[in-house]
Image (cartoon, rainbow, N blue to C red; front, side, top):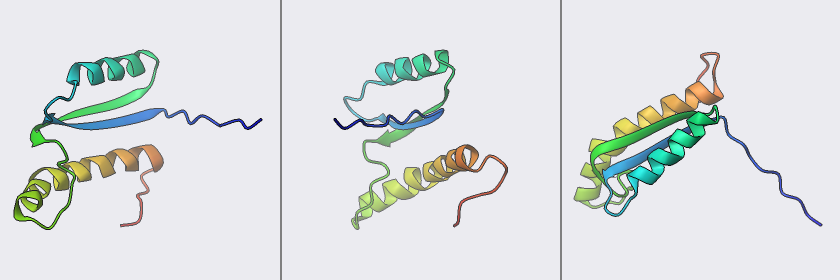
Length: 95
């Protein structure tokens, strides 16, 4: 019989578009609250004004503009989170 090793994370970053259509922000907030209650670190970021797939990258002008407005700054925030989690002594990932 094969056993799978479960990955347990201590830190979570959740970035969601605030104008994401049918996305259940209450459900995500409940999930984040439950993780925090269990002693986990959670960074739950609702990106105001962004629609679904704001990290998407396609060659059309609208998608490029959306990525520049939302994707670039929030990717920097995500990188900052990863640097804190994976490089806690102040070292950073290769650029």
